[in-house]
Length: 102
Length: 325
Image (cartoon, rainbow over all chains, first blue to last red; front, side, top):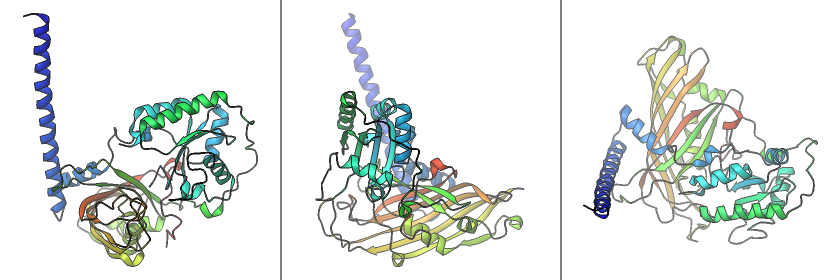
């Protein structure tokens, strides 16, 4: 078997595994969604259902990367820091507080 | 996904700028130094002078502390925001500062926007999000929104058993409906796809909750909450800003409440607090993007305890709307 054949075999194998992984993830997601929908219909939640629903709502660590930044909540505070560190301000200005509800 | 979910944006800001967050509903109206500064840079930026379709000045601005704008944009595209920030860095090299601003004089904030945090109060972080939809598996659930609840010391105390020192497992007590109704009015709102107004008091049809003691130790009580909130409002507040449709439809929420709390008997405060509101929302509001999603659909809200430190004291959205009354 030449190196090209080996390479193609490896690629084919990777594609098969990737396909399996995607299908497993999709099945897992569908199962999770069914479980959430089942919890939503129940009048009283078990501890497990309570945790499942709250964890679904709260952002994961990979969401909301803006929380990695120490945003300064006042313009004057930011200007003073800008002068002290000799840097411009990056102002995130929203209809609503960007650190709260927008 | 949002611009601020892109690591390139976070890294660029951290390396080059001082990050500031501000609510323009206040900044554009403030009669103080912060208001003057914001208006000055906004009127050099992407919405300078604009009055239609709205007079918003929402967006991202890079400016010097002396008020010179370097670049600005209002965009949901991370690539566009990155380009704006790079433009700001280039402009910085070409700009001469007008000298350092003087911060020695005392800052006198506009009293209309100065709301102190209630003494010995409590902060809850609100997060809302759509749940998956059985009839629409492709419905996106990544959008979410936040707010903060501020509770007074008296309200906080009212969420614990009346006599904590003698409480025993199985004891039940009612949460004051006024407190549940205030939380509902200002925080059990569908903000998932943009802001919606606080509920009118008369729209809160059901606001009831009760709790029971499920665990007792020497210094603390474990508590469990159940309840229900239903709000129905006929909105007649002009047109939806997203599509121009008449905003006179009905909107509402019908939510069950569940919760787990831990009350410290010695400290007279909660050391753990997790509430969940889950059920249906429907309808749209003038400034959100629910106009194509009016039917009853599942969504939820969590409220969890934050330490009462200045970094967590982001004001509740409707703090200036007779919030504590």
